Image 1 (cartoon, one colour):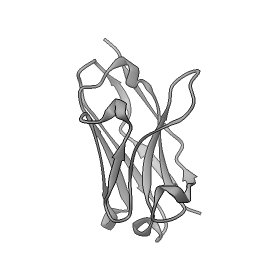
Image 2 (cartoon, helix red, strand yellow; image 1 turned 90 degrees about the vertical axis):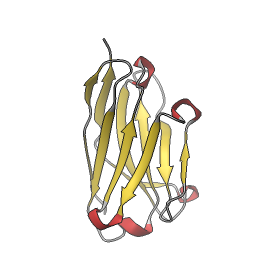
Image 3 (cartoon, helix red, strand yellow; image 1 turned 135 degrees about the vertical axis):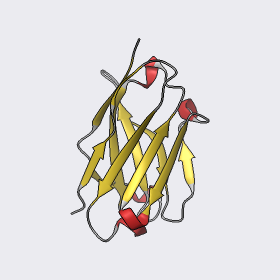
Amino acid sequence: QVQLVESGGGLVQPGGSLRLSCAASGSIFSANAMGWYRQAPGKQRELVAAITSGGSTNYADSVKGRFTISRDNAKNSVYLQMHSLKPEDTAVYYCAVYSGRYLYTGVGSWGQGTQVTVSS
């Protein structure tokens, strides 16, 4: 069982930046796709960004050009750099590891979540 621990959330003003980090335990990390999801109050959890084991990325339309996902296999970590944050980005952000190399394999494990609040 892979364990995921997120960090880096917090309160930021509109237009600001945050960097989320997710540290994973387990040797399968480098072979699996990783993703960041978010869930705002009263809304369904949605995919924000994902990265395959080979480094291919995809993003939700709402964050394209503002967010960047990256991974460091040597550190068993995945990151989400967020710029130009908007109030509608406010949500609990979850790190996820997929069951295989690609997104179609589905999420295998979730982190506990980290709160991101964008407000003046």
